[in-house]
Length: 125
Image: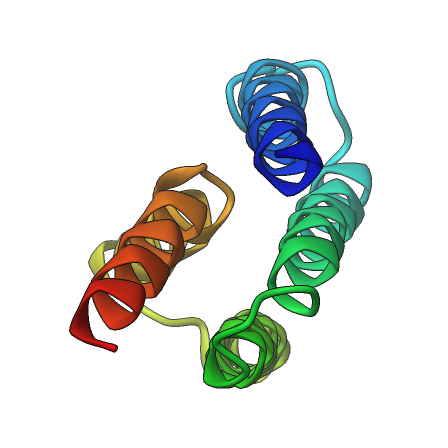
């Protein structure tokens, strides 16, 4: 029972983190660009950490691996495209797609999807 409450609290924490990131760094126009970029990475890392805390305790062990691998891939993608953009200057439409990927993984949706995967896996057993 306690595990269920911890998950719900972690979901609420992810929602709060996502809201803060969206309101104060994604949508705010008075934040310096470098500060905004660092904040985006820190919030992705925070959400990754909260999810890891939950999925490391799951009885479905592969969820932890999927969670970490997915967030590492997204972080590398954001870092890589950001670094390349300083040299190549990508089209704004392409950068907007990368932005959408970052926003998606900064939301509670991946956490909920992983929770559903765990539920389905437990039903299968």
